[in-house]
Length: 241
Image 1 (spheres, rainbow, N blue to C red):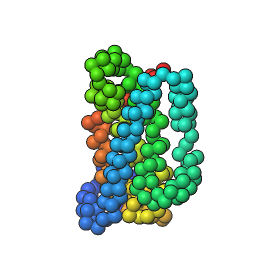
Image 2: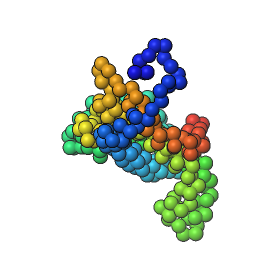
Image 3: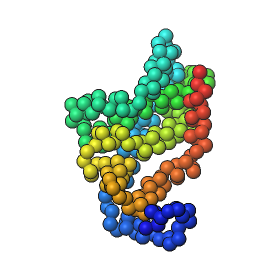
Image 4: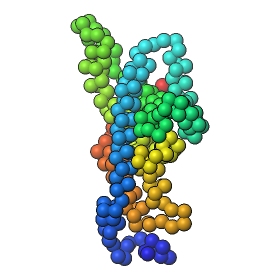
């Protein structure tokens, strides 16, 4: 097999698409993992966006004396690695019967990403002049109407940045999925590939490389079409004072 030749060849001598054919015809499990990845990623991104809008707006507009401590707590929470909370997450989800469910995995991933997403949305809300909201209040608009019809349309780029960031982080998640999901039918892409297609002593490199290409396509698509929103959003979060 050409993958094992030494010295390695950078240009394949006998290119073939047999691995892609085998993936479609013989590996139905892959598409189950693929579907699970889409469900978890889209659901997590949607929930995170909704929570980040409300919490980020509150953090930006409600100037209370504990604001700086809340911001510090959100930033401090990002210092801890994922592995430091997995045992607690496992125990909590088991106690509420959400272990080995997509719902439990979505909640766990959402909780991990909310602090950063909240700070990111807060930065965008800070850039919106308060006078626009005051004008809406004078015209008789309530807080929810002002938020939905006046403020959010002005922060679409920030909302897209949060959504894209959440989707990409969830798509690549391994630790949460490998710890909280043991049922093969509910596994996501990264865990499914590791446990089914990467053996202890030998790999089918052509199939593994094929799966890697197909699995990376959504991220390539997102980066290609939405990279300007990611750059703008992450830059805004970086310069927040």
